[in-house]
Amino acid sequence: MSQDNVKSVIEALLFASEKPLTIEQARNILDNLEPNEIRKVLEELKSEYEQANRGIRIAEVAGGFQMMTAPTFAPFLKKLYKERHTERLSKPALETLAIIAYKQPVTKLEIESLRNVNIDGVMNNLLDKYLIRIAGRKKAPGRPYVFGTTRQFLEYFGLKSLEELPKMEEFSSLAIKKEPGEIEIQSEETMEGSYEPRPS
Image 1 (cartoon, one colour):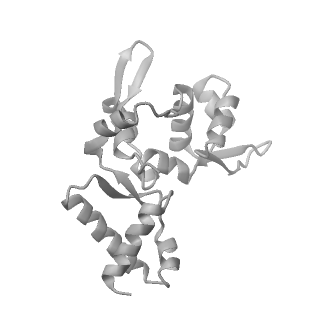
Image 2: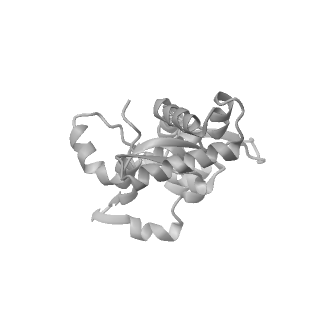
């Protein structure tokens, strides 16, 4: 298969894939082409889309590559999809998810001690959305479950890995006080535009 054909096949796979396409998946489809060759083609495609200022971008997310809308065009997409139902995480769910993301592996009791509220419903909701998972058991009396984030979590927030999470000291610049007791995180709004997957 010629280089141009390989590039076209990978582009088609990216377009058709609902989840980030891994190099290993592409390798299996492309008759075991070397991983470094596949990555090179993906990087070339990524650069071509950026240089041409296309409405679509290719981003490395959650261990794979995915086509996404360019952040610049987020306002237009919002107008197009203003009637679309977008399920957002509640403030308690975001707070719980943040604790898990930064302190994983962490037990339910440790999370509750930080939040000072019962989190049974929130935990079930996050598990149902596949944003968190049971990561094992703690070597402690009762052997409680410990929780961690999932690949779905990385996809939801448009992250390559947990290393891309903002550092704790950066939160002062991300949080904007709206009213007493109410905090809006800018990154959530940015994420909606920057990392909106291609509409299916």
